[in-house]
Image (cartoon, rainbow, N blue to C red; front, side, top):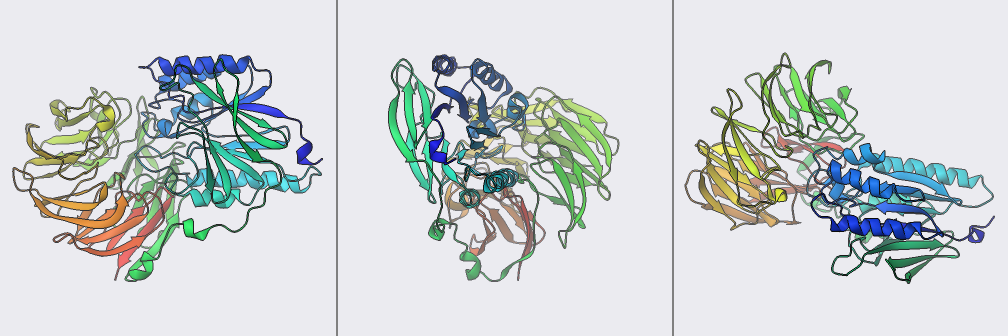
Length: 607
């Protein structure tokens, strides 16, 4: 049967509902849309394409599901960046509540598939994780293989994402479109921009739809898509007739060559030929943390929940330990014990040589904080409002601080008799190492949790703590009292800071092309140097770290830089991919390990 003879059917698309426990209006809008859809006998199912909540919290996700459960037709939901960027659950509650964060199903001889295209945990460009690309490829290959033996012809495929699959929105869009272009993909649909738009994403039609919110209007609405001899897309305002705004051709799609000019430019690697890759390894899932080493092995966790031990010199896998849920925070290793947290609520201590579990501590929420070990005690924060001090040999909790109002991502800093760390509750904390009691806490004067000093790894020199935050201020605090020594927004810094090995200079990466070095010895903000490093707009919370006179800098678009730490001169550049490079692990002034959200680990050596 020819695909053009398939009977007409319609489905609804809901996107950007932004449900919040503190604002009733978005829920009122969603409930109106649900009621309107239930009154339309032509709608056969509903697709929800992300940003269903404002903050990705469990209560809001459950509220969205309760509202969607009132639909009289099946519905399918995928997550958006508001579900994946801020979440005390390690971005796992969406899957726990809805059963998954992606979907795939057949309807009337057609295939519909949706998946996440937002960043995970941190502020970043849109990104499709390697495990989701593998899942997408497997599903589409299976559909096309079945189509090849059917007399109905190639199965029409509809793809749903939150972000459009184009440069500037999704950093690895081309990896996704390379998969889609091999199949009978009719179009991609989603939201994110809160308005009706049509993009060409490397030859594939990408349709963005209006938000479900009323915004400045008096009433809200959603989208209706009707499939017949064309794909007809309507905007449906509650209480009004649906308005047609776009038609796309429906039929067998064959895509020509990709436009190579749109793809990332790696020519910089030919310019700096002295930068070589000793080895390069891809894991199954994305990586959002920094590895640690004991001199022989590297230890790193990935987005599918595996902790790996890799041979430092070759990258060969020595052992793996599967937690079943994503690992976000960087591990720590000391005295033959590797410590890290998982979104499965556990903190683990593993034997560094064998990967055998020595102990685990179960918490009440995902553990996303990076670990730090000092004198046999591991310090790590969780999503349940607690910072833990754990004996690394026995797994005994020495103390826990239970007064945090949100989750922890950062690596805590030990200095003298205190522990320093930020939290997504707007505060930087100093705890007494002996018993975990509060020494002081500091706030930047902002009540918005999204401006918290929570992703930055604090650094210290000469009795002063240095941080940056999304409020774009460089801040220096007295380590003993928490009082402000100096604070400046001269440079648009954001969530990145690093200390020189001699403790005299503190570095930060700015949001527009610049690396800045400030004097760490003074009681006022004095610039040592500021270098326009030509890496473009930047919001990746990766720390610039110095080793043996080289400052190692990583960016959101896969570019790494080596700089002279004394002068700020850019020594070389090298592009690994087009996605987030995490905080580097410098081994010397000439060698460094980089991990990426593309799931890669790269050993760089400068000759």
